[in-house]
Length: 467
Image (cartoon, rainbow, N blue to C red; front, side, top):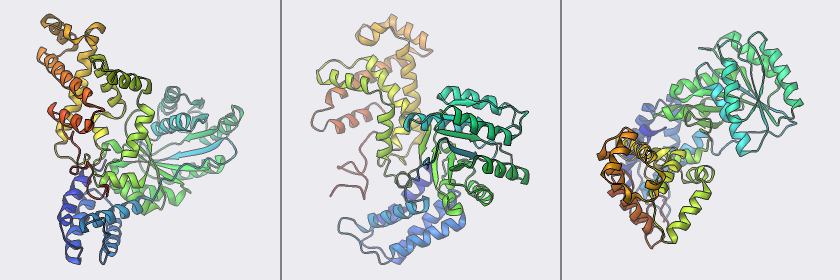
């Protein structure tokens, strides 16, 4: 998300970064570009007007701190204003009530509501150690109940039965009793959606709200609908006391208009964002981290948290010990590293969270590199265990067999072996003085785009360098 906006803002902010001081003239020029970038990102017009007015007011007459130059000071103002626009800080779920704490999910049909129910159940189960029950009160959409049942099994949530023959109000009342009986900490209620807002839909969900008395009422919205998402959320908020918004499908949205418009229009915080199709692809929404991503400053905190959750610590420690003892980095280790990167959202998912990497030119090259990693994994999977541990055994006949088994060409196998040799050399450099910089330079040599420390010799973009 925000790729287009990031690129435009990066270009417009460059025009002011070299100025000796902030003046009304150069601020106005920069803000004109910022305004255009936000409108192209499908941010609501009134939100754009209010945002640029706030930035201009803060910037004119700004006393620039000694540690910053005028350009960096302006970027900091834009960053702080973006944070303020999106909600200042993460607004966590409030589950402080007698169990079961009820979460009511609302939204239009096709917004990703049922999938989000499963993602939220997994989030609460794995990260907050809650016992979660789910129920579907959607008696209109074919297979809606069966879909939630399948997803509940996948994420390990307790599924409470319902059928299309029941009335939604009956389902909700029975689900409350059942969740209490099985001692569930949280009950998530999936409601019916429509293709558009109508009176019947609103009356039904208002009735459900009165029955289950949820502590959280979340509106799920498709981020790809841009500022329309914010307007739809406002219509629901007028009918229901929403406590927050979940932005779904943000991985398919390159603009970001919904994220920048929803809170300003509804006054409700964005609590979560869906970042992929898998059931673990749900992230708490942190306005400060998102603002940093938009301005190309990365999101290292989220990257660290993902690594803590998704990296196999036993394998990582085993590899570190192996390398420090001077043992060879083999193809089995290389395959593990590819798997670990895939678990963290692939090369592009890692790059967008590194400072200065998110808006690098040549996104097609990044995608090509990601596809290359996938091809590498398939080739290694076609090798025998002995070949992975002793790559020097791989001769011409073995290459032919490996290529045939992986559906690739012998040239692809040769390329993999060459890149593996380079990676092996790089692993020897890790831990030495300047090891990470040496490794980054080596990865450039492997043709991997963006693999360099951005922002000059200290490896950080302007405004984030150590003083």
